[in-house]
Length: 121
Image (cartoon, rainbow, N blue to C red; front, top):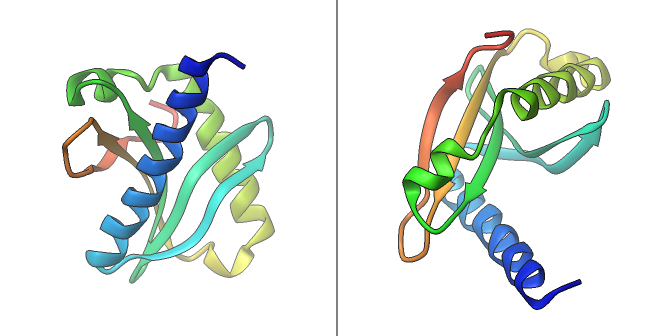
């Protein structure tokens, strides 16, 4: 693995950890990190009240780059993975599921974009 790739992975893990803290400070309970199923991965699954948020974290050099980094194929994989999570956790099926995005750039606090996309759109 190249030094640049290792650095990017470290920054990504740091961004996920910082994102979890931001979520906790705003009343979310972290249910799962790095959930993998159905050929995809969800960075963070969190709950606040009746909202079940499937959250993708994107860390880039700028917030604009991070916001643009989530493409339609990745959204579809996250949606499939969310369905697999719900199938394994039927007690959460009554929650209102939502797909969120947290973007982060160096020297910035994570920005939480709630309802970043609608399933199937």
